Amino acid sequence: MIETLPIYISICFISTTFFTLIFFYWTVKNSSSEKIRNKSKLILLGLTIWLLIQAVLSSRNIYNTNTNTIPPKIFMFGIAPTILLILLLLLSKNGRDFMNSLDLEKITLINTIRIPVEIILYLLYINKVIPELMTFEGRNFDIFAGVSAPIIAYYGLRKGYLNRNVILIWNFMSFALLINIVVIALLSAPSTFQKFAYKQPNIALLNFPFTWLPTFIVPIILFGHLVSTIKLVKN
Image 1 (cartoon, helix red, strand yellow):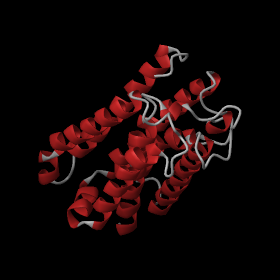
Image 2 (cartoon, one colour; image 1 turned 180 degrees about the vertical axis):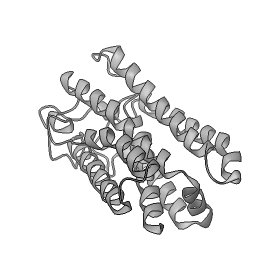
Image 3 (spheres, helix red, strand yellow; image 1 turned 90 degrees about the vertical axis):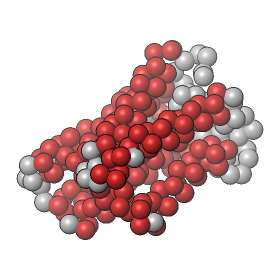
């Protein structure tokens, strides 16, 4: 953990991460497939183990030391495995069945987690452990996806007031906002790929508990956008 950081910021982020975990579990638990529902606790266990692995790696300073490795260690041991898992789900029949069984309204609502995440990022910037450009005062507008998600979920999906194309466009725009901050975060972190924020680099996301953002929360949001896109295009 970052010793100079107020403890309440870390507590808020840990709470945000566990809220994401429980919300995703609730989404899986309410799957349209009985087979998937029966596996929801196993999925919860798997995700919990993954969080614990990342906690151990970051707590032992695996990610924040010798940051010039290629590829960066957080990518190799934290981000790449989640990308591979998502690709496996996309390419396998069982994976596609799992994705298709998830409720579109619930998977859209999970984007509300982006609101507390953005607030925490701003607090991290104030405490000089990430650059301003990673916040809503800089180049990160991801909070708009979080604020608008309940509107899309309620008026678009539950009430049907919004055309499916409008919801699809919102999904693409929110996905673009996610990619935007991911790229900024990667290029602001201490590594051979760093291009921004040399005076105040992104060091927070290489330390516990904030490593859970790129290794868990972002992949969950990314996965949600893929599920939403597939379901909206099919319908």
